[in-house]
Length: 468
Image (cartoon, rainbow, N blue to C red; front, side, top):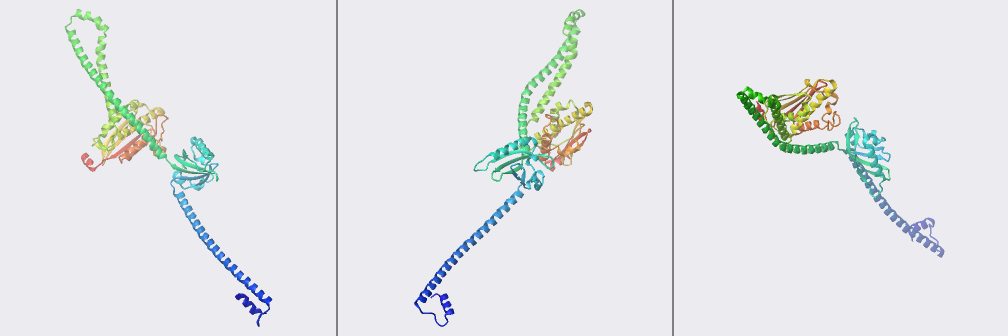
């Protein structure tokens, strides 16, 4: 009999339960029902225990998944905030939805303030059409995998300057969002253009060196022949004078028509001057060819000792075409020891400064009418302490104070199109400071003139002792 049923019978039948056959069957049926209920309850409890363990396992798994998602999200947020690149989410109308602090580091904008603004408002007007074309094409591309496109455009900084940005972007068609990563490549592009220009100049230099070599031989022939003609003409004049001394009056009279037809008196007066000018011209061509050969000689990878004064003289010869019509060049070269340097690069620096001086003087002459005869370009060298000092001064238009901090920026120029590339002064800075560890000092006054002072340190104290 089921224990629970036995307790119930004792509770209701304290003396003794009924003994009839019907009651016995009833008791048996109820006992069976109790046992069946116990089995059902045990099965239910087992099922609940299993379900409880499954729910608990799922809860812990979900908890771990949430924690992992939170960790991953935290890491993504950390990368989003710390990335040096400009990470941006943009809607289908090209409005900024989210921007990381990279915008502040690269362009100076506060990232939260960009939300809701049009991305195109920061793009250079000349590049807007290209960006629109690329983003529209990206939004129209449908496929199982997201398409990524590369873009390059100029973007305005918070200070109004323009930076070159290289970006890659993709479009999420479900959320109608562009995801873009931008990187500032202004310096890299400037370096690439500078390298291209350097390679081009190197090629021109090699060509010029070859041409100078080819010109050198015929110039020597011409010079030797002009010298021979001059010496021969002096001999002929001496001979004619001797002949005239022994001729009689009748003989001189007979020869007078021939002398007049040959214009002998004029030839006597002018031939010597003409031959002298020819010799001077050949000499100047020879100097120019020599300077061109030496100037175009490429730098070695290692520094080598060179004469700075000689390099300046070559640069002045090379710049003569720019200088001779605008100013007189004065030189004051001190006694300098050989300097361990990249002389080819320094020669380019000297030439750039001289050409800039010529252009500055020409500009002042055109704007203010100062006669070119009053203008001077002065080149001076000396040793001060442990440095060789080169000063290049001019009486040109001067550099306005507002742009003095920008003259070393790549491609910044105030010269008209075709006259300035904006690479001369960055090259000066790179060569003097970057390659030689020197210094550049600038003194300038508008409508008075400019002086660039280049300070190049000696490689070792022994050179200083030699100078002393």
